Amino acid sequence: MAAGETSDTQNDITYLHSIPQAGRYLPSASRWNSIEIDYNLLPQSQDPYESLPSRFSKSVEFNLTVTNKKRLKRFIYTASAFLLLTLLLFLLWCFLPKRQHHRGVAKNLTGPLKDALVFFDAQKCRRNYPLTDQFEPTGLKKDRSYTDHHTPGVLPKDNIVKFRGDSGLLDGNGSLIGGFYDSGNNVKFSFPTAYTITLLSWSVIEYHKKYEDIGELDHIKNIIKWGSDYLLKLFIPSNQTSPALSTLHSQVGTAENDTECWQRPEDMKPERPVFSCDETASDLAGEIIAALSAASLVFKEDEKYSTNLTKTAMELFDAVTKEEPGFVQGTYTMEDECGAQAREFYNSTGYKDELVWGGTWLFFATGNTSYLRYATEHVGMAEEEESSADKSVFYWNNKLPAIAVLLTRLRFFFDLGFPYEESFIWSTDNVDSLMCSYLSPVAHKTQGGLIFLKADHYAPLEYATTASFLSSLYSDYLDLLPTSGSSCTDGTSFSVENLRGFSLSQASN
Image (tube, rainbow, N blue to C red; front, side, top):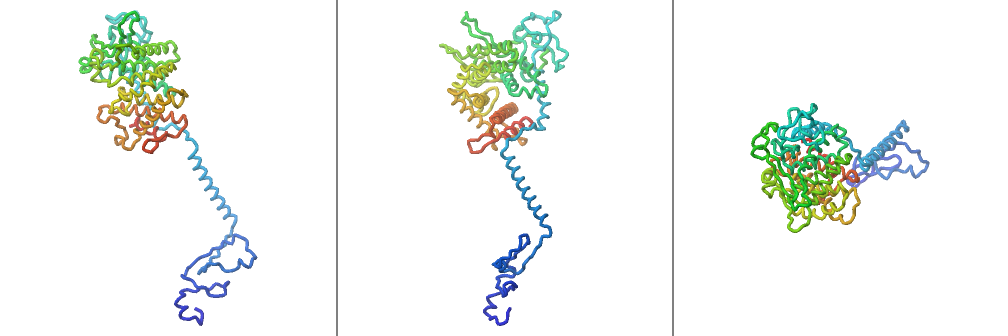
């Protein structure tokens, strides 16, 4: 403190700082008020005003000197360039479309897929072999209308399932040879067989290149043809000169003999009853129409066979959708002669969705818009018929979720215009809602992520499988538009990657 300062000054000023350039003492509120750092990077000005003291009082003045200005500038330029590059890469990652890569886990699914196809080989009724004069089953006349690989006889040496032999050679007195046995029993149900052929055909239509890449395209086409050949035998058109109705065979075998008694089909007794319906079995007819139409697309390179499938589907469609006085549509399980036994295993609760399903596939097979018009005009009635327990569940008894996906496919990739807009908008809204239900955090799932769409049912895998299939298809459709995803009614959204992740999780759980 300078001499002569009064006591009041002592009380008001706690610290005094001496700065040579000021030529006097400066008051300060604290010991360390401010610090100025001079890196001496800029040239010194000769302006006398710049030599005035700083407006900040300070206790310590640092005078840091950079010994190598080139290195400092290089560091600053490098750091700036790095920050700019990081920002640019981040922006590119956000806005550029993502390239899809095959996940490593997908390769591990090839084995299970091949095993799944072998299941159908094991379920085949009868085996392939060329017709020879040395073999003729007892009570079975040779039918030269069969192609070489569709006649009864000994097993070929290259048969995949070695423990299976010829069976069911007298089904329908020889007219209903072929098809697939159901589950672990020896009954042949027409309704789930047609549904299976429809789905297998759809998978080949959408993913034939993937089947080809793993060497299974010919294999699955053989399975589809085995089923479609059998379906062709199920429909017997009415004679145009006779008032009789057409015939549809719904089942071969009985629950008492072929379900309760688990025996090898090769050991079955030859007598097996056949259950038949007329053309009022609308749901069975609709599913067979869908199967034959979808299969015709798989075999479009074989023009003769593909045309035969399509022709039969069109003829059956005309028979079951005709508008005549007294003609009544219905489900095949309503009539005891047709579906009394199937009622216990594959009870159909409606028929309108199957007719729309068949009409939609028939449009894809023929390009005839009259079938699409029928489908779009009746899809609303099919939705009204859908039971609450089947909402958002695609399986053999409910085709509406899959119909919505097919109609959305048409909306995305074909400009059909009037008068289909309303149905197409309905379909897209329903598919978005379906995908949101799969991805919802409140959806019933196991700890491993397997979705439970019908939690009280004994076979949850079939619903998880179809959910995986539909979500995979829809993710591919969105990716082709291209778009990143879609939105849900609750304000949330989902991406293409969300759908693919869900689909893969159901296949790997």
